[in-house]
Length: 452
Image (cartoon, rainbow, N blue to C red):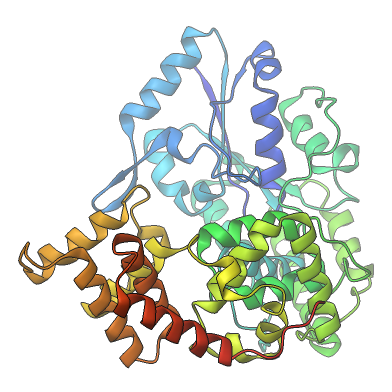
């Protein structure tokens, strides 16, 4: 039996997370209809890379398609007596050429979205998940990266290999992306209710997240992200593009979509073009929160998850040498808790490893940090790198790191190292004296603490 292979490639910001979430939950019923959808993991927000690891493996030269994994998937599909292998991942969008080499008969599902919507949505996503700090760019021409890339792929591999659909409420079969996707599979959609996956931020939540991206670790940012998705305000629907630019970009989007849809058959393209032409811009907001708006978000986080608020507060204290600590938001945020109320809990490993790396002149990204590496392992790593004798204690190393940080005016990090040294030597007079000095210096940066 020949296995039919269907690969959903997104592209990004076309409802992929919701599709993958429901496909995974509905895998049993899909199998009853002859379709094998392999399992995959999701993060705390229900977000996933889909079936990326089902056919790719990590090597020293990066991710490559694994022939062995592909053979195993096809064999499993046959073993179960199923006729179709269905895979989904936005990662596949950039790797269609690789995939066709091992799955030469595969067909690809891709959704076409208004490039103007994609531009704003991708920026918002970069703030939500990719630690973007800068405001959205004002460009002379609307970027159309996904549309241009898809044009290149369809032209190269042939329109017969692609199932092209319009990403538009006016074009979806059944009025939503899930019903539309299941119509491609020729299966009744599941009765599961709406899946709230990767929920959009309100304007206030987006700007708050952009601010904490300056100093929060990725793990902490992910926890904040989950809370911010539930923060609602009157600015849940907004646009960051200046109205004049928006109209210019709209004309660019119409021209690009018209050109693409004149070359290829795209289901629902007339409805998509009509939506792009007739939909009014959402309320324009300049990227700046007033203090009252910022405070509402901060209060919400503290009410929903005080431990997350304290984690942010501690990370901010440790960033007392950065402008974000002394700006109007930073000073408002730390009013709620003193340093002594939030210390000794968070971020030692991330901050210390990054500082050690800086000593060697090599910065590392937080996602490169070893997940299970303990603090003693970090010290041992430094000891080996510098060739330090065993006679030099961990406490002495931590103290010296604190002194270096202090000399560099990095008082938050100096405090971090000295607190760690205090755990190993609780009664050390110099250590305890320095900690008090650091606490006073950090507290001296703050304004008078009042309740919100």
